[in-house]
Image (cartoon, rainbow, N blue to C red; front, side, top):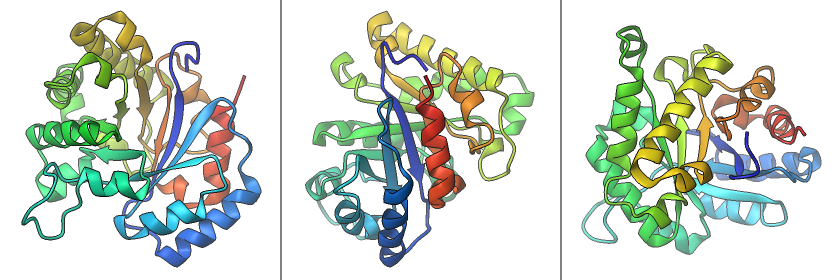
Length: 257
């Protein structure tokens, strides 16, 4: 982490877990555990049906609410979709875009990711843009080229002043939900490469200011080592974000001096 130039962000991604009732209970439990996060911003990204409940449940805590997906059109005949304006009006601050599960199961592409990023920024949301490689791609030695392509595609037509509002989450697909984790050095190497790509697009000042998270099975046992890396500015947390004690432990790791 480098707090001199950028914000540290610990964000939970609940995926398709927890009802509205369970969301309220989680908030009540977290409130008794979560310290004042003086060094980092805490975000909880919840299913769309839980957003209103989460906004109310976390209102007395220093926790921002995020969504897990967004559509790129503002309105229209798109049954089942949710627009960026709808999320903003509810009080959402962040939105996850391009998660590998969205790409794998729902056909998202670099093109649709870019459209969603532009729509989110236009509405005043902060996109958490997910990039990552499969195990096969890593073994082929094309990780850096692939990640650079994903970053460039996601930020196409995004001006420098809005690029600063984006968060990039490096999530190696082979480490999501598998219990496998990139080593701290591997994570930092890719995060550094992401920053280099942003530097190429926007210059050093913007690159220094963009938060880059690691999101491959970060947990209380490995969080401190990962977050100690100079280019790892936080975490996008999956399974561990569903348990208040584990999520709190990761926030505490981000609050290290």
